[in-house]
Length: 370
Length: 219
Image (cartoon, rainbow over all chains, first blue to last red):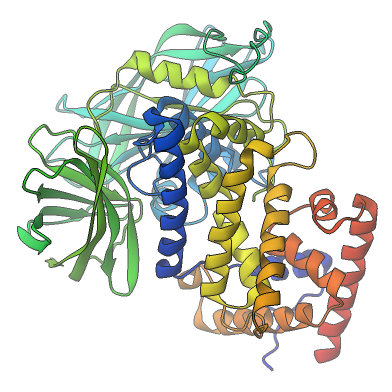
């Protein structure tokens, strides 16, 4: 038996930690996918039967951290995501740590981010750019908001953030999370899509937050009529506080790899063509096209990238371009992208205008990254 | 099944200058999402989501995503097999989904309710098939962040600890697995195994003392 100081469980804390580690495990991808399919089928069946509007809700698979969902579904998805903060200590740092998790691309972005700590205070509301990270696939900003005057029980969040680079090019707004500390401050993470052609290296970004949202809970929510969802839709405890809070931040943009494979795979009359892949330290982004002979759409692929024994699950997809192209994102990346990769799409989920359509693959496309 | 963050108010999703991933979300829609999230501020988030799942089945996906890892870990610890654990985890969530209308918020919480379903599913399965050797091939997570020697030592220690847990008397083993694989607290474990919180705490304390002693004996 191998023994050392590292392997000991001398204290209660050591034993506690060792036991959590002993039972830490992740399911094999195949087993997880099989279980996921069963749950998805059950939910979809119920959705079709009971709740037509929700059936098409989350489209990118259960692993989709920010998948498209119904409005309420989307809210609760992020509610859940933000609430994964177990064991967080005091201070907003712990909230950020909880939001980015222990692994994957969010953690990478957080760990590699420039620590800035630049603050500006307007009307007693202090807004701080805590950290910033950028690579070819994303810009992440960590923005703390603090009500220095402690005006009752409020929850503050930076809801709108505009970012441009030194050439005036905009970073498109995408998605974010806000996690309050329960009183008068909040940790916010916001992600943007960088402008096309953003080169690695030193940049100067201009960040403007036109207003922040303040939650005031001094007025209780109305009673809900029997049989309705708690809270209803009529009570809105939020109001805006105008700024703007403006910042100029230096940022070293990390590099990435780009390939344009233009390779295709065909299964059952449906072709999937991979046109572009960008691998960065924090994520894998790709663009595909689907030729389905009019069987449905828009398509949300369920699948993964594979490289050097690692799996990068696709967690986001969109059909925003208007040209039929589908963008995919795996929220995990690598700095060792060079070599052979596989894009494997197990299923395409879409609809034909009246009901959901699912096309089974797998479509497998092998490509190389420089 | 993570511990709840003490003192948290309502977290909020927001989007900034438009939804580039879909192209059809405007600020108005986004704010409605915030409002939807904020109305659950005073409730257990799982309870709120479970309540929402009664009328919007897609909301159950959130519960699945949130609790799948811990349910899997718990069942992996009980069954010792990846495929059995995944199968039983799916069964657990199918049953939970079917029964979410009957879930009553406000007692010991959703994850204890879910753990009871998982435990019952595992007990049902164990009656149908031969038990397998517990937990010898669990894949560790985050291995790449450690040096090779530390990895070997950690893996060895984990194997030993799992073997020691497997040798505990049944109630203690059950409690330890619920604590360290499923991540439940003493109150929740008590509700799963039918004991008071105080009795469960004593059970865990005895189990940990025994584990520490056994581990020391091996050294």
